[in-house]
Every structure is written in structure tokens, then in C-alpha cells.
Length: 137
Image 1 (tube, one colour):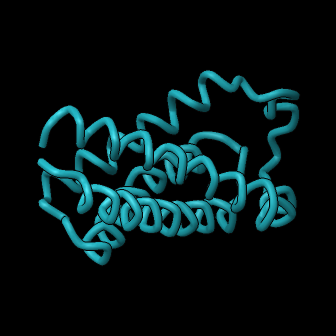
Image 2: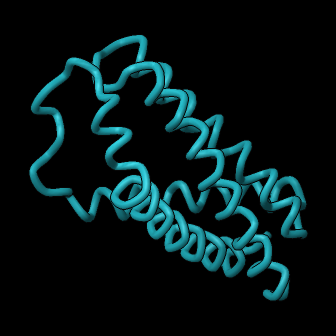
């Protein structure tokens, strides 16, 4: 792994993660998550803090890229599997910890978010693996 591959994979990953995040949580599943929130009210910001969203999404892209490189996942299938594992483990950790400690989501939303993050991570991992297969060492 080198800095060029890490940078390209991370940026591509962040872009794909952002687009899939918008698709999943703003368009496809917004009603589901709104209906399955917990008892916490007033916890959503009226406007996103864009720079923080960019940093978080870029870090997620870095994590997927690093994991692909460390595992040597060069195929699209390897990227899909690796990204799905990373996404489900990363967000499952946060989702279930939040479920245990606060009332932001109910159990259905907790499980659904973990599964959707596995899908989002998997698709991102597949695309990053494909892009990195075209980038020289």
C-alpha cells in the first residue's frame, strides 16, 4: 500500500458512502427510521454540520480502504465482503451501544441500520476494490 492508493481509495470510498447514505437515509428508508425512533426528542440538528459529515465519511472511506489493502482484497467480490464486514461491525458497535445507553432508536431501527451499513460498506468496498485494481502500485 502507498499514499496514492490510500488517497484514491479513501476519496472514492467517501464519495460512494455519501451518495449511498443520502439514498438510504434521506430517500429510501427515511420514513422507516422516523417511525422507529426511540423516545428521545429534539436530538436531530435542524441543519447538518457539513464539515463534520465530510470528515466522518472520509474516515469511513479510509477504514474500508485500509482494510482492503491489509487483507489484499483485489477483486470486486473481496471488496464487497470486506466492506460489508467493516460496515456491519463498525456501525453495529455504535448502534447497539447507543441502543443500550439511550432512547434514540428502537431495536428495529438498530438492527436495520446495522444491516444497511453492511450493505453500504459492501457496495463501497466493491467499488473501491475495482478502482484500486486499475491503479498501479
